[in-house]
Length: 272
Ligand SMILES: [Fe+2]
Image 1 (cartoon, helix red, strand yellow):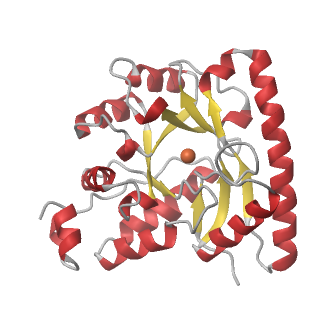
Image 2: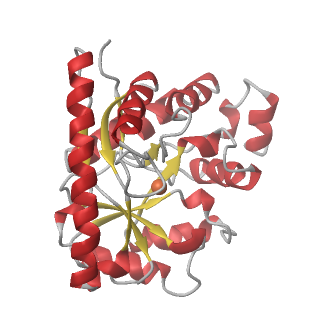
Image 3: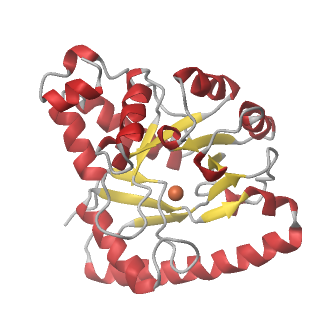
């Protein structure tokens, strides 16, 4: 089987370090699942509290855990390569929780595959009322490129204006494949469509926790069947591939209401 064309830079594949893969064999099974979902390149992104980056002792302790998890994942990747002609490319990253507005991302292990891109999320799935944009601006001023994970899942998100403020401060947005399928509920599903209608998302990833199957292939099919194959290709393949090379994303055209003719539920999502 050939390696897939999708690059997934948000998942919890690294074993025994967070709420993702529980051990190396689960990570190996997850690599198989990624292969079935069409991914050929993966950046593993275990949870990391941003506040730890300002506490050297705590950061060293957490990084020791992640170093061990990365070693175990490399073992799973080697075992995977023994079984497949086209091995998965697996790189190291982190999902940094912005529990402080000024994380220190100078350690390359806090960023995505050593690039200038960093995957960040706000704490407790809520956008901070006052300093969300300033946190993004701080990261940009520090020389890094913040990618905000799953903006559609923030429970207090009320309008796209809030995301526009983050984008103006320098954020890129990564939506979850499962949000398109309704896996996080109807509000997140409605919000992800609003984000795509606004043309604000640059990337889509699985946020796979090594349980069940990644939503990647099903989300791509849904978009393609509804007439948004170009957007699906940019979100899941082209732009994540560019990120892995350190390049900025290409613009993703807004998902336009007029193209939604395939299914009534899809038209409802689009507000048609
Ligand atoms: Fe995540």
